[in-house]
Length: 161
Picture 1: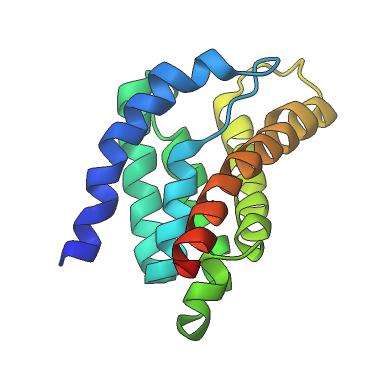
Picture 2: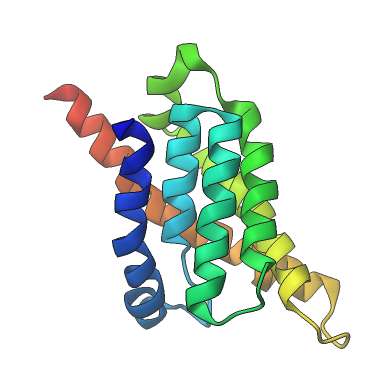
């Protein structure tokens, strides 16, 4: 039961960090998604269904507290978690969470998450598809993956001690 409560306990401070601190380190309006890093990490530990439920709940509460379009993060995190869930393998949990393969999974999932969020949250028909693809999906995916390096470094170091 405690494995199901850990993400909830981590979510509350991560939500505060995402809403208060992360906008201060934005690069040209691009911010990393620290909440989604947690979702992908626990998805790779618990499986696809667990990760989808976690992504749904994290997206829902992020939408509630951020004041954005209600349902945009919820939809994008659920779909991206579903797709990232195909990388789950109970025999390779340590390999997937404590290696650079985690960064590949995180990049793919965050690219999908950001792309869907950009489409769901953008109501301006004047914005071009290439702009949404580059600024709305690729740059946040790269920035989030850079932040995911901390998770990999911590897990690799923890495994060596």
